[in-house]
Amino acid sequence: MAKQYDFTEGPLAKQLIFYSAPIILTNLLQVSYQFIDSLWVGNLIGADALGAVAISGTVVFTVLSFVIGLNNAALTILSQQKGRGSETGLRNYLNAFVVLLTIMSVVLSFAGFFLAKPILAMLGTPDSMIEMATSYLRVNFFGILFLFGYNFINTVFRSVGDSKTPIYFVLTAVLLNTVLDPIFIAVFGWGVQGAAVATIVSQGVAFATGAIYSVRKKLVPFTKPHLPAKREVLDILKLGIPAGLQMSVISAGVMAIMSVVASFGPAVVAGYGAAQRLDSLIMLPAQAIGTAVNSMAGQNIGAGKWNRVHRITFIGFLYNLGIMFAIAGIVYAFAWAGIRLFITDAEAVRFGADYLKMIAFFYPFLGINFVLNGAVRASGAMFQVLVLNIISFWILRYPVTYFLSGFMGDKGIAVGIGVSFVISSIIAFLYYRYGKWKQTDIFGE
Figure 1 (tube, rainbow, N blue to C red):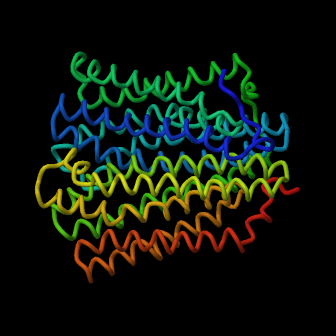
Figure 2 (figure 1 turned 135 degrees about the horizontal axis):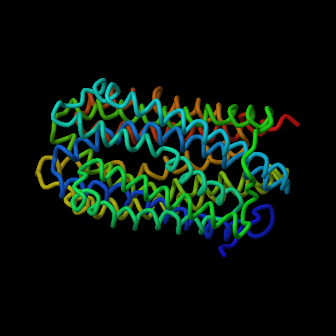
């Protein structure tokens, strides 16, 4: 049985290292999950099928972004209840989350199933792909309960101080998906629809395994679902809506940056796309540290131990700088080789490698945002973090990148994004230091 940390006691530096490391591994497995899916579809069916999955994936990612936001709210509420030592509160809010997520998944499942084709048409899906994309998206919407549950069960374990157990559930999903993809796609002849079925079956098995394991081992106080109290529902919505919107703002901001990139032509788009695939790996440690700070700080806020909250943030800050500057050095040294893993076109490789070399030493500043926002989010100040994200993406990153790319050419993309990382980290620090987030009281007591 994996250890459940009580972050209100004990050495924080050691706890942060041992708690965040499994989160990094879990996130890495999540990234490999998407990579394996694309690999099978592209090789067994073809380019149109891969394009159909990619277009449908943007819709799935938007839904997933909102789910991640809701899970951030769950992590904050459940961590604070754990820190308070309130078994009843933890049990009641767990039940409320389960009921709300179930209702939401059922509504989204039906709505998404019938609206899949109109949504894809609105996105300009080519005629050669729209039928495949529609079938793929409908299956994903049909199994959206498993997507919700699969992510939620991992969040629950992290909120009670256990970041190791979720690794086994995610690993189960990855291995099962790797095996089922070729069977459903090629052996059964289900094509793109088979890839989607493999995804929801894998997530469903991982979710069921996690739920059964936690109930049998009594690791978290799950109960038979029942109607939650009005106050519990309102508390969740008060945090969950802005938390979900945070991820939607980020998703929209990423698309806005892509519009700037696209203006420089296909070579730059290809090079940037390759760089972004590496980005998803490079930022895993910083994201994991931010999640760890959120959970650890949440327990201590619940316990009223603010000195430990600030100590956790400071250690997370140093931990982030050390790891991300080390990674920056590696990225700078091996930028060309990294980009060549994905593309071979000389001009695209040139842009991708130059982009990585210029952006590499700005990564620690983005990590600072993850750490500071994790601490602020732990207090329940979700609306404030939403505002910080709007400032980061829409007042800083997009306009600065747009302006500098017009002035410096394609080199301005990396410089603009990097400069926005620095400025947004300064703003995040100023709010952390002087803002009123510490006055947030989730439970109105």
